[in-house]
View 1 (cartoon, rainbow, N blue to C red):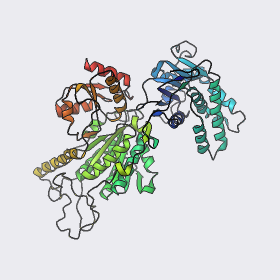
View 2: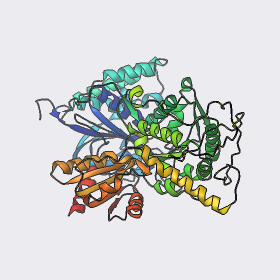
View 3: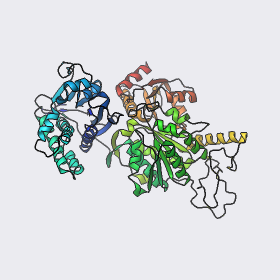
Length: 615
C-alpha cells in the first residue's frame, strides 16, 4: 500500500556495513532500539571480523550489523537485504551478494577513491561502471558532509571523522520515517561527561537527516507500521545476556550461590562480562588463566555447594574435555555452556555453526554421558539456562548447554516473564547440615528411582567422604579396580542420564501429527526453519516441524512422532550430526540438508529444499 509521500511495507532488512571501527554495531543498535520503541518487532545479527584490527578498507576488515524490523512477528534477521549502507568499497563488495535485486545502496562516495577501490580489489569504480544498474543507488559524500557539519566544533579531526556513522544513520532515519529523538536522548546520556562529543554526534545525525530530505524527490521513503504484540513489559536482549540472566534466576530459585569460572573466548565471553556485573546477587566470577583452570575451579565450587558454571566455545570445550569427565565421575552438578562457532580448531571465531554436537555427545574418554540441551533463539537462552541449571542440580550431573554465535550475538524483543510463576523453586539434594546421626553415611548411595547420589560437601563434619577421578565402589564410594564394579558403575552413570527423560517435557510439534514431511531441527536454526515451514503450511503442504531442545536424553515421544510422517528432513549447519544420531537410535530413513559456510540458513533456501524433499 502506498500513500503520496511514502510506501508502506510489512518488513524491511537493513545492513549497516563499514570498516571495523566505523561504529557499525553502534549504528545498527541505535536503529534497532528506535524501531523497537516505535512498536516494530525486530531481530538483529551483528557480523564482525575475527581480527582485532584488520587493515583499514580491506574486505577482511568489514564489520556489519543487520536488522530486520516489521509489523508482523519477526524471528530471523532476514534473508535478502533491502538496503545496504556501505561506508567504503570493501563494505559494498563484501555485502552486495546479500542485497536483493531492486534494493537500495547508500554509498559513501568520499571513500570510493583509487586507494579505497584498490584495497577492496575493484579494478573499476562500481558507482561509475553501470554494474549497480539493478539497484537504487544513493550517493552521499558522507565523510566531507560530516566534516562540513562539524567545521565550527572544537574537536580534533579524528573525532570529527568518527561521527560519520551518525550521518549515515540520519539518512536512514529519514528514509524509513524513524523518530530521531530516542537516539538524541541516548547520545546525551552516553556522552554527558563529554558535551562537545554529544553536540557533534547530534549535529551530524540531524545533518544526515536533512540531507536525506533533499533526496526525497528522487528516492522513495518507507513506513513500517507497529506490530501487534502480546501485551506485557518488553526489553531487547541478546542470547548471551539472556543466558546469563537465566543462570541468575536459577541460582535464586535454588537458593544457592552462583559461581562462574571462565576463560575469555569468542563468542562466549559476554556471558562472563554480564555475570560479573551482578555481585549484588551473590554472583562470583573468576577469569582463570586458561580453560582447564576455569572448569576445574568451577568443579571445586560445585563440590562446595554452588550452582557452578563454566562457559566457552568449541576449542575451549576441547581443552575442558578431561575435566568434564572428572565432573561426570564425581556425579556433581555443573553447567557447561558451549557457544558454538565455525571450526575445527580456531576456525571461524565470529561465524556460526552447529558442528559441536558430536563433541558434546562423545568428546570425552571413557563412557561419560552428559545431559545436553540446545537453545533455539536469543530470548529462549534464558529459559534453557534455567533448565540446564535445574537438571544439573536435580540429577547431580554435568549439563552441556549448546547455543551458537548466531543467537548469542543476535537480539530480539523479550517479554519479561513472571519469574515467580514460571521459574519457581528448584529443589535439589544438597545436604545443608549433617543429621544428628551420620553413622553409615554413604555419599554414593543412590535414589532408587532417579539413580541420583547424595550431594554432601566434602569435609562437612559427619559427612566426610573421599572424592577423585578413580573409579569408585558402587556401594561404598571407595576406590575400586574391581572389573565387575567398573561395569556396574558405568551402567549406573548411563542409566542416571537416561532417567532424566522423566523430568523433561515431551517433544512439541508445530503442525499436524502426521503428514508428507517432518522437518527435524535443533538449536539456533529455529527461526529460519519455522518461517519456511509456516510458509509451506500456508500453501497447503502437509508439513510439520519438530524442533529439538532436549538432545540427550531425547524426549520419550519422539519415536512416535517420527513414524507418523512419509518423509523426514534434517537441516543442520554441519555435515549431518543430529541426523546420524537419529538414524543410529531409531533406524529411520531421513534426508539431510547441510550448510557449512559460517552463515545461518535463509528461509528461501529451506523452502526450496523442503519442496524437493516432498517430490
